Structures are given as structure tokens and as C-alpha cells.
Image (tube, rainbow, N blue to C red; front, side):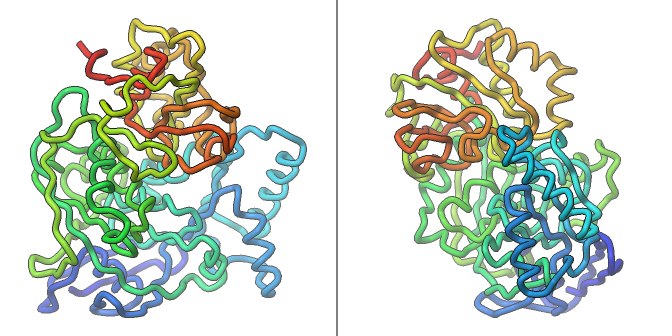
Length: 440
């Protein structure tokens, strides 16, 4: 495989040509290209350069502090840095407002090209919608949920505390991970959704197998699983220790790009003789509604084992459940119904595009008539309860990324994770409920 890279200052353009060198996975191909190598193999140490480095509002001040302590005044390439406000969208205190002002000053000093203020959306969602993130890219980030970008065939890798090194130099060392191939077949039965499958997958594979490995999805079922669905497949594995997750960009993704008038791309996938650590197979028709019990996202059981648990709050949002298909699933359940007395339901669309489509198609009206509170595009309460924290003793059913203690506010609250449809059904019932009972 021969890789060509053009464009030194802006987001790259690439072409992929056939050559006698074979036997690499999709992840290995992207890492090799970004590291300037013909091939890489699992276990090798490489230094891939970031095609894009992403950082969100909560981390900018700390990153700048670390950079300046090293004598670095601005990132290695400001044209390849993405910053957005998606956690503290609406400051709730003077201290937070002052930090937001400080962030804007830092971004201006850094000379960042790709800066998006409050209201544009969730940073793990809208960059795909606007074509900033593309198939074959190597994106390095502070936040772990950069793995969402795998939905369009982009390799998203998080560094967390070592991320300032990427801002300073454009790269960092990585051990090339092994890849787990996950083959999907069949179709869902009514009332079962992609979040149920994603939860089942992390339960079945588990942390020991997932540790520092890549989940790569393939199989006939992808023909009817769009980008929104693929986001869920790529979001959840990080919660059990996977390094990242990715889906090869196919014709479906190509059409998704065309709908948004985005530039076409050259498809790339694993070689036929690539080696995988393990192969798992899942038939979508065998999946049933699932729920993750507190306090671990992989503490997954069939929904029927948690039915009837009273809830005080229902939340639809976060980068694991704020795309258009999530909104549509919830609206199908909520249409003509009301949120139960004593339950508050909060909804945060993932992006401006998602919110606008919900308005056009009447979904926003369904939410409001049902008694839900709709917030601005962004992370919402998933970010330690911002915009709707849980109180002591409360129980919440949510589409958030994880349900560890204190994730949405009080450390004395409990969070159950589920699909958008289950969240909506539970909001109406006042207790954890099966969405299949609310569908026509």
C-alpha cells in the first residue's frame, strides 16, 4: 500500500494506491500513513502525526498552562487544531464565564483555525457533519470519545493527560494496537436499536479482551446501519478499555457525505489477509433491549431484568445518544404521550444540524408537547451534571456514555444506561420500561 499526503498546513488530502505490500488492518494502514511508513505491525512503537488535534472547552486552560511551562506559546500547527465549546455551553457562574473568556483569549493567541463557540454542537458529532473529520484521517484528542469519528472510517485516538505533547509537536508515541474484528449480520426486530447491540457487544467481549485493542466492524448488516448507528458502535468500546473503534467507510458513508456536499473520498479497508486478534459474530435479529446497571457501563443485562425500577429523571443526549436517529426513536415513543408526573426529561441534540432537522420534521414539537425540556446542542448533563444534575437518591435512565458514581451530579444518585427508545418509554412510564410496549 502506497500512501500520498498533500497539504502541509491544513487538513490533509490523501490517496491510497495498491502495491505488493499487503496484510494490514484498517487501523494499521492509517497509522502507517500518519507515521510516514510503508507498514506497521501490532506491538511496534510509532509516532503518527495528527491530521487534526481536538480539544474541548474544559481542557484548554490546563493545556495552555502546561504548554507555557514548557516554553511553548502556541500549537505546532494551529491550522490542524480544533477547539469547541460543548461542555459549559451556557455558563452557570461568574467563574465559569471568566474561564470561557480566558479560553477565547487562548484560542486567539494560539491562532486556531477551527474554533467553534457555544451552540454549534457536540465536538464528537458535528465535525463529521461538516467534513472536518474524514475517512482515513488520524485524529488525536484529549477526550476519550474521539472514537466516535470511527463511524466515518477515521482513526480517533485519545491521549488525555499526554495531549499537550501533541499540541506542542504534532505527534506522540503509540504502540500499534491489535484489532478485534466484529462481524454483524441480520436485522433488528422492532423496538430493538443499535444501542442495545453496542451494549451487548461490550458485555460479550469484556475488558480483558478489549484492553488496548481496536474494534473494527464489518459484515452485511452495515448495509443498513447509517453513520448515526455507527457512532454508537464506536463510542461504547472505549468504556471497557479499547484503544479505539472504527468502521470502514463504504458506499453508505459516501452517500452521507454527498448529502452534505462534502468532498468525496477514496475508500480504505483492511486487507483480505490482515491478521486479527479475534473475530466475533453478532446477529442483530437475536438482540433484545438491554440496560447497563450502575455503576459500570459494561454491567449490561437484558432490559427485562431492570423493568419496574422507578426513575426520577430521563436524559436523551451525550455523544453516545444525541444524533438524529436517537431523537427520532424517542419521538416515536413520546408522540401523543406525556412524561410521567414526578419525572423530568432533558434532551440535548448533538448538533445544530440535528436540532434544525428535529424542528423541520416536527420532532421538537413532540418533545415539547410531551413535557420534555430541550437544551442547546452539546454534552448536557453527561458532563458531570451540567444543565441538569441529579440529586441525592435519584435514579436516572439515560443515553450517556457511562454511569460511574457522580457522573451526572450527586455521588448518591444512580444511572442506568439504555437506548433512546428505552429512555423515552421509561420517562412516560415513570419506571424503567420496554419501548416495544409503546410502539404501534
